Length: 425
Image (cartoon, rainbow, N blue to C red; front, side, top):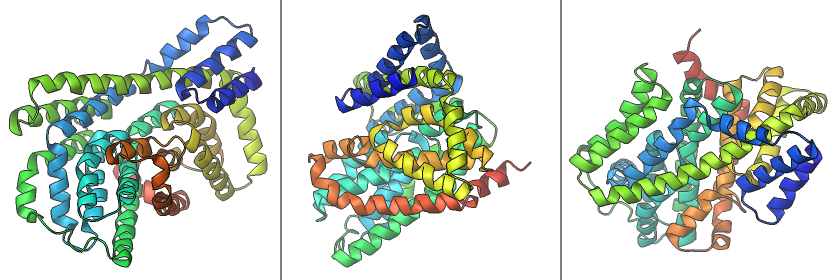
């Protein structure tokens, strides 16, 4: 059964069938070969999405779309530019910083790409930056959307590996800030070498004025994250609060959302949510079948024999996840692999929260690596260029994030320090 499922899935990938359909078809063929009752497929697909924490996904997607339409994104850009836009290369640094702030309420890298990219990619091009470099920068910076909490992939890992989502969220701050700092340092040095961005400060507001204009937008992550860690509401409930707050700000305070806009916002959010939920349902069935077939246990035993130490295990897993992330959507990869790899990581003495961050950061790289990097397609759509044109400019950004991943993997205190402080036993 397992051989049939894997070969079917690989064949579907080769024929460019969508990831969700490929996983679903592989599962159906596996059930047929095993002569099992087909009702299993319906039951397990329903069970995969019948989990309360998953309700956060459509709400965070909706919140991101409301923020984009309601003027919150633009004000965050102006605020970030007031902080770092005055130096050479300040506009690319603004891109990274804005994505980091926007990520603290959106939970989605694609939403971050569109919300921030539609503002900053044209601005970067206007200031003389190459279009391909601007698109590569935006795609990479938006990756922070799944590392800075709240994060949809972290929710999926928490549900799949039965790990506290609250602990994952608080642990995500260290790696998220570390990657943000590394990217900002890289673009600052790179722009000075290239001689770009000497006029990036043109049109920059003062910090005080920008903060005043963005006050309601900046209050949003404070309310969301403060509510979660203050025990006022759960991460799932926080997603609904994010929607409510962004609607109030967009409709009544900034008044940039008109009633007709709500239809387009809701339609876009429903379509995005449906795609993710369909992937989760099919991946849940696939994970159930391979678990029943004993694949996770077999892989775990093999890894323990081949990779004798935690250091080798992390290196091997990172290499495998990097390749897998190029071809499989992040959510599907987490749902299928987390139940397999998390127990093995615990056997090696690796904290499941730390391992979750390693998985999320690694698979987030898949969002900016061809051939199926969703952030790349989103950035190319905004910049109106083809994917092949930006590959050369993308490579340095991928190397920076890879270097950060190695540090995150082998310096667990970066992920667990704040978690241990907040969740002291």
